[in-house]
Image 1 (cartoon, rainbow over the protein chains, first blue to last red):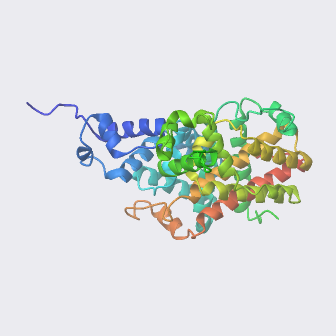
Image 2 (cartoon, each protein chain N blue to C red; image 1 turned 90 degrees about the vertical axis):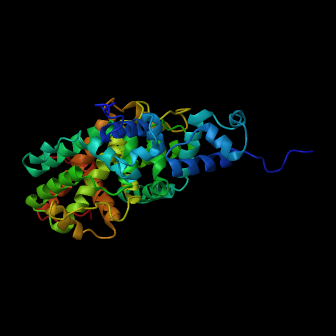
Image 3 (spheres, each protein chain N blue to C red; image 1 turned 120 degrees about the vertical axis):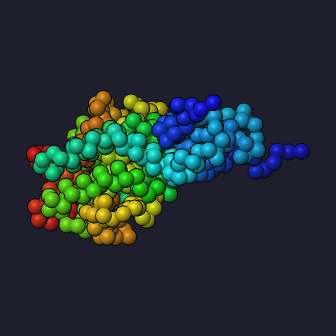
Length: 207
Length: 207
């Protein structure tokens, strides 16, 4: 008998299985992936470079949904705003992947290529080389924190008794259904306004 | 024989065990806690209100490390900055708890009490009731995204070959060891500058 034309495991299937596990339980292990695919754990190592290899496959998969074309927009702050929005959407679909990816070094070539483009946008905008990564990391923190919030329940605060926290109760009556979007746009707008002042040569620091 | 003076399980022990599980594996289950404590799962339900009850115990435990006294500082923006810093430190100690807490409604009374204080600070500063929760959520997103980043490895980008991403490679040479703190302070400073413009009656919006 020849080999089956569709292999039982390949990197695509390993990635899909790992993502399903993380979406469901917040974590994965290589033996769990093997069990789900009905193969021996050892067979998986012919396809991926161990656990950290799978993490990088997850990074590539989730980041595929980021529209890198946003980084070609003009001017630079429109590019960063649009990139932040597509970045947030991509991770909001898989919020439980976020802590895994944020605590493991970035090695996936296609993801590094997107950082390269973002660095290029900021350098062309006039940011100093010493500020570029700080700006990108700050933007990512804001994006990923907001992506987690997008996975939050509609009613995020459940007050047992309005009289104990009356001002909170009153403030919650004013919360709109687009709470998560409003908070993200507020933080993004604030951040980009500050970034504009950095390249405009203003002091840009809080007093 | 009388009852042992130290009960085998209590809410403190349940919380400690759940936190250890989440720190280690990103998740917990009530049966896992029972196994770790050497008791029947059913016994746990005499002490906690199911899984969501344990999540609230985790929230209370992690938030105990937030210094709520920061909210008494003057002026209001110094209070918010100091609160954001202590909030970030508390969660940076348990980054894997963040997605669990962000996707489950807040019900812990002591945590709600801290929101009540934060709302009071912002109302006294002049924020409209309709903006208060948006400001708090935006600040939390920034804080929690930055707390996750604090758990990131020192070398967060591993380039296989500098020539493929030359601008990224160059930008990374300029990254200081306090990368995470610098990014957090940049975003926090930007956010509070914008918040000051909101209460100063400026337009406060990006053009």
